Image (cartoon, rainbow, N blue to C red; front, side):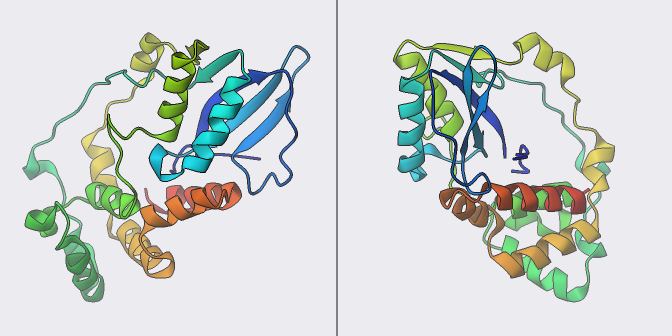
Length: 231
């Protein structure tokens, strides 16, 4: 089963267990068993979704962590990476490149968003992030993602929690966001996202529903489609 990183799916944690039954349906699951000569491993596929929205999935994850010896997470959730700022005058608005009908829809969607005061100034990059995340339950320090919640639970019960990548490695691998990247998401990408929104509803909310139904294959497929179209 191929899980991508969101695109909104990714490998969040691996727990080493004495044993676990194989997922009955690999296309509609969030936990998979992978055996190695020395251990059994459980792979947990996740997108950054708020933990308290899906208590049944959190409960299953905690049960697996209870049986584990070690929990591996991808990166340190407290790691702060560098940020980049651009002058507004250097950012290309995407609005004028849209068709008249897409412009009307664009205005309607963003008229109730935090960007309502700068609708015609939004770059394609900014608009794409807002459209892809629309309708998703927000998370933060008091409402962590599922991956972070399970990692914290592992620490709370004394499990050995490690990261797959050290802080220094992540900082060295980081590629700062460039103006070229911000301006590379053009009208065609936004037109695709508007069409997708008409087809499936609010995109972020749709991903939440797919995760709730454990439709991992569809999460991966749709994530790859979005990644291909929005560039």
